[in-house]
Length: 238
Image 1 (cartoon, one colour):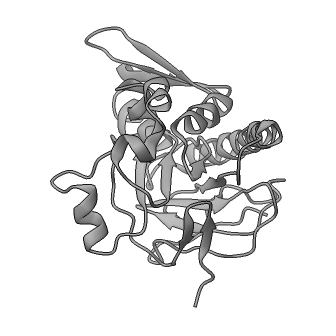
Image 2 (cartoon, one colour):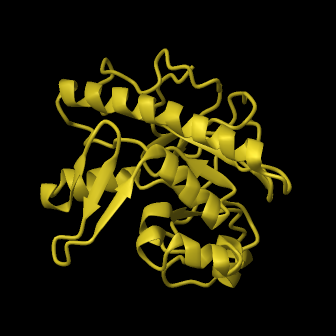
C-alpha cells in the first residue's frame, strides 16, 4: 500500500479521488455533503480564483479553508492546465513565453500574467496545503518537437517554482509549510520526452490528478508516495 501524503491538515490516503472545487466549491454539493461521504481533500484552481474573486480577497477573508468552509487538505492547481484548455485551443486568449504566460480575455481585453514565482505567491495567499508548480500543458497527441519544448519549459518552471517556494518557507514564521508538487509532462507517445528527466528538483515522489502528473517538491526530499490516478503513467523527475 502506498504511503499516505502528509499535509499540515492531515494525511491523505492514496490512491485517492479529489473532487474538483475549481472556484472554491464543488458544483451541486456543499462542504457538509463532501464530509458526509468521506471526501478527504479537494482541488481548487489558483488561476480561476485569481480572476474571481481574487487571491487577496480570499486571504483577507481568512484563507481558502474558511472561504469554502472546508477543514481538510486543499490542493491548488496552478493554471497550467488552462495553458492548454484556453491558450492552446484559442491563441486569442493569450501567449506562452519561456519566462511567463499571459492570459487574455478577448471580450474585455483584461490580462493576467503568470510566472512560476507569482503562482507560488498566489497559492500562498490562498493558504493551500498542497501547491502545484506552473507548467506548460500540451495536448497528448501534440508533435514530438512541441512536447519537447513543453517538457523543457515545464522543468525550468519547476526549478523556478522550487526556488520561490524555498524562499517562502524560509520567510514563514507560522506553523508547518505546505507541500509543493511539480507536474509531469510528455504527452502520449511512450518514447517521447518526459518532464523532469535529469532535472535538479531534489524530490523523489509522484502523484496523478485528473490527467496531470504531480510530484511533491516539499522543503525536504520526499519518497515515492502518491498515485492519485494510477491509470496514467509517470515520467522521471529526479
